[in-house]
Length: 444
Image 1 (cartoon, rainbow, N blue to C red):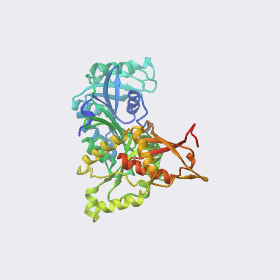
Image 2: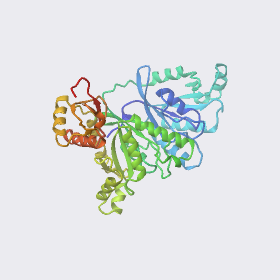
Image 3: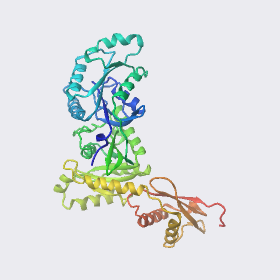
Image 4: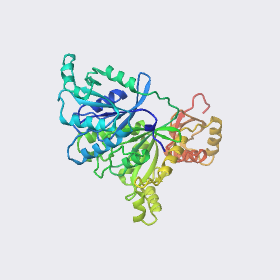
């Protein structure tokens, strides 16, 4: 396993809370991936996204605010960021020009100097040109590599981009693109621990407090020379239990991540097994027509507690998730690393199935052989007559059957066709669809 973090140059944005780091991240990635809110501590995890400045590619890294506050999250964020900075190439140190220089800014610079990486000090929230020199004077103790900006007004960004372009090394990519993988599940089932174990770095904050992850975090990731994007999401819980506006926003971003991904890892606590809430999450995944792998995490402790653990777990899956009977299941432990290699191999298998293309002639040989196995559906008093089947360009694979009476093809008959299609072409574990359209110009 290896991460793209070891390939691209990395630029980290650091600073104390609420100075505009996530706004700068969104500017450099031309996105709104980082949650931006006028409230300290919104960014808790490290976010990594590909970016480019004038032809040079790099990874931009958004980090949690560095503070000396004694609360648990502040200490976790500080430890996490300090550990991560050893692996970056350049630092953008953001400060607040309106607030002026404060002791915590000096502490941020001390941390930056400790890791020995080249840095640019960016004084944000300088809203007019005539203020620049006066505001910058207060920060010159940190050296000459200093720019004054206003991220909200997009002022002063060209000098920062020039600095980045000058200091970034060249990089040429030679990888095959893999799918985007979203990791979803209820709070506190070990999603972030799995991300950390896969990446081999302490990138996500891991604690036993539900709601630690508030963003949907994207990380480029390489396995077997294929570049994937791994997305950790905030835990999905019932709407009535979402406590504040940040959690509501995070839930929306989790759902957005499901829509943008091609493969979903649905993480379940192996000690508990699938629940009604997991079934609702799986239904949402299938409604978005996404391939899904069920990850039974914490299996190391579960197998010690439950006799014939895997058999018990599969029985629970059959009961709670009966509407998707061939869902792939991987048993993992983020703590010990067991099952992670199998998880990645399963991702590869599912990814290959998503690319399946079946020749129309082969598809129709199968189709006419299959429809002879069961009585034709009936529309009114007339049998539904099928003419041919063809594959669309959608992923997961989808198919269009042309018939004289499409409305006569009921859900039961579709399930019959899908079951046989999966069996013949090895498409188990992905949600395929068959559309039925009225044939034009046929003698009915």
